[in-house]
Image (cartoon, rainbow, N blue to C red):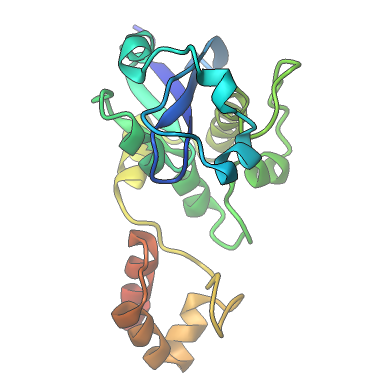
Length: 223
């Protein structure tokens, strides 16, 4: 029996807000297929900042169903895939199957890159996402095609098993380079060797994500 990997993406009213668009494509035996997408009536207005990113307006979703009315179409895959899966997983609690995060896989394979964003990885890897005409970046279905193409290319390089991808997804990423502050652009390894006090200060005073905390603690413990 073939495993269905369902690449899924959401667009939202804000980083903290609800879903206003959902889409997916499947990867079956290395082939991208079964595209689906739906506008969703969100529980709150779409922020201007979000509109500026994905260009979904209140008029677009005014007559759309709520997420609970469409989510069943997207259930039933063996494994779900997203770029920054932690975000989409938080927006789709109805999905209880395992998840794979292509951003974490990218960080694992190419830690030295200046970015691991979806479009950055697309062009770094030189993949042709074969996105259908009429779609654009930061729309859910467009991003699904890109993520699917990135995952296929990742596995040309690494030949990960699904179990290995799930394990990488479940663990914090060890980051390579500081992205902010006085040491922006410097490797964490070098900061850990030359300015341990700064890492301690960041841990005590900044609102860090799990990957930043894990990386700083790693290099404070000697790397």
